[in-house]
Length: 301
Ligand SMILES: Nc1ncnc2c1ncn2[C@@H]1O[C@H](COP(=O)(O)OP(=O)(O)O)[C@@H](O)[C@H]1O
Image 1 (cartoon, helix red, strand yellow):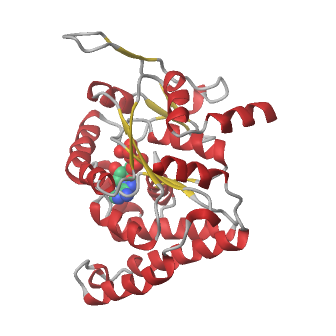
Image 2 (tube, rainbow, N blue to C red; image 1 turned 180 degrees about the vertical axis):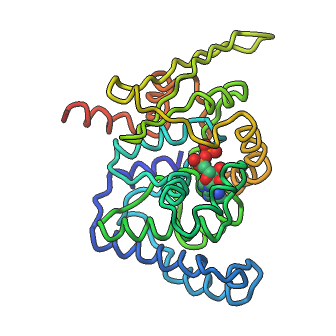
């Protein structure tokens, strides 16, 4: 509860542009040394690396009152991190930064990393920490230039090492751990569709799990595209059954320990999705103490 009230304060706190900009430059500078292409610089046990971390730590531990929230979404592939993170981003006016999107943008750019990334992503494996932190640092830098403050991270951190690096350079206020019944995850991934023109995310899967052995049933309606997107839908190349199963295995092995990392620091908010967006969104807002924000937005619309 203490974490939540701290977050609510942070949500409503006015952000001084200068303080926010300073905060971001610290974060970018702090992340940048780890984005070096030299693997020895990145070695967690390397003396130079620890020195950089220690130097950065001294300047970064600041109170969150002068900035927007810094939240992280955790959860298995298909759980809906992107959907809820993007809704919260719209509601709070805080950037939604999805490392999966950064990877896909890089893939589409046919830059030097493109073919290397394609092979990794299409096998359902994780991209190296070096590459992902490099992409994230560049995204934060671009945001800083536009005066962005705070973030809702989706898909990062995905390894304990990434979590340690992030924790070493800034304070994460809250980690929202979305949970969905395992039976629904694969179907949700296979039903995902993206509009090739506007980038909107939709889902054609209709999940209808019957009550069984004392376990309640669950219904999740499809999330259909609006008519203007219907003929432009594409499926992600890594949303095939084989690759999704591999991503779910990797989540268990590499990302589940990240949940423990934040749980032990008292930052993890567990949220069991009760169903589809219509049913889950109001409950998530309630859990985050944000119902008033939505009321204000509806009143202003
Ligand atoms: N933090 C990260 N660390 C390593 N690889 C990542 C990270 N974020 C994204 N990726 C790569 O991008 C792919 C797509 O990510 P994402 O869109 O978040 O997928 P998911 O639907 O599995 O949550 C991942 O399978 C992985 O290859």
